[in-house]
Image 1 (cartoon, rainbow, N blue to C red):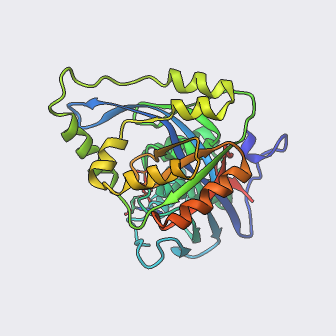
Image 2 (cartoon, rainbow, N blue to C red):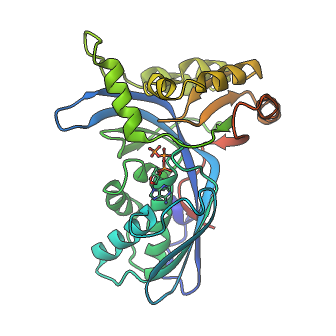
Length: 314
Ligand code: ATP
C-alpha cells in the first residue's frame, strides 16, 4: 500500500516519535440526497485532498495525553471529546493494546471550516498510533475504524481525488492522468456547524416539489479528465452552498470578490464557510490570493495545490 513508500514493507513499530502529515479536503462535487427516515442524507461527492496540512506527532507515554498549537488552540477541547483522543482509543480497543501515547497536534486547518480538519486529525492519529504501537493494520482496516469516527476519515487516509458515496465513507479512487490543480482557499472568521448547514438545506428544500434527487458526479468526473481549468471550473457543484449562504449571507461577497480577482471559478467548500477558487496555474493563484487579501472579505486567503496524498509519515 503506497502510504508506506513505493516497495518497502510497512515498518512494524517505531520506538521514537512518529510524525504524520495529513491534508485537508475540498469537495469538487457535493450532491446531497433527500433527508431519509433514519436522519441521514446519502451523498455523491468528489473529494480532493489539498496542500493545507495538519501535523500530528505521537510519542511513547504512560497514559493518553494531547497537546496542540496553531489554529483553534485555546478553543478546541483536548479531552475525550476530541476526535484525536477518540481515534486513539478506538484503535487501542480494536487491537486490545493500552491507549498510551503523548500526542501533539500542529494545526493549520481552520476549525469548523468545511475542510474536514477533525476527520483529518483522526486519520493522522490512526496512522501514527498504528505505527507507534505496532498494531500493523492496513490502510483499509484503519479506514474501517475511522469511518465510525467521521465520514471523511477514510478519504483522508487515502487522499488524492476520489468518489465518496454512502455518507461519504465509501471511497473509490478516481483514476486520471496526473494533473496538478491550483486553488485559492479563503478562510473565514469563525466556523459553521455542519449539522446546522444540513438542517438549513432541509428547511430550504422543504417546500420544493418534486423532492430534490441525489445528483450524480458524472459531469465533474468527465471534466476532470479534460484537464482544463475552465472546464473543471464550470463543473464544480455543491448542494450545501445555498444553505451555507443562507446562514452566512456575507459569503456571497467572498465568492464575488474571488471572481473579481480573476479566479476561474469559486465554490463554498463542503459545509463552509471556507470558499475555494480555482486558478489556472501557481502564479495566477498567488495573484488571486493577493487580491482577495486586499479586498478584506476573509480572514486570510492562501494558495494550495491538489491532489495530495492522504495521511503519511514524514
Ligand atoms: P466537516 O467538513 O467534516 O464537516 P469541518 O471542517 O466543518 O468538518 P471540523 O473542524 O472538522 O469541521 O470539526 C467540527 C467540530 O468537531 C469542531 O468544532 C469541534 O467541536 C469538533 N472536533 C473534535 N475534534 C476535533 C479536531 N481534532 N479538530 C477539529 N475539530 C474537532
